[in-house]
Length: 115
Image (cartoon, rainbow, N blue to C red; front, top):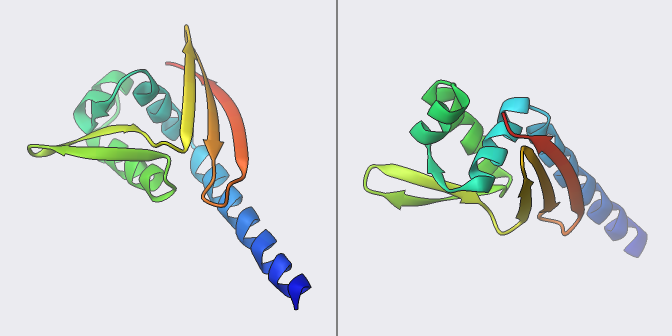
């Protein structure tokens, strides 16, 4: 019985990690994370900084939020986005290093460059 439970738990960990990696496989989402790693921003600020349309940014932020990679704070009619507590970022010039703790507690590390 314990082997079956362990197997299910391992499958959930791998599914969670795979889901996060799938979301992060999109370069636009990495650019969004890198952008808000420097400072909290609303959708229009992110869209302007990355020269993207607001609907694409909003959609990507929704996917990042679903995986607990970003959080938002309502401000009037806008939402201000920031990295979630599960994400630690360090910015060094144009290089951004991320350490992510998945919902299952697994650690992921990756880096990208600011546009």
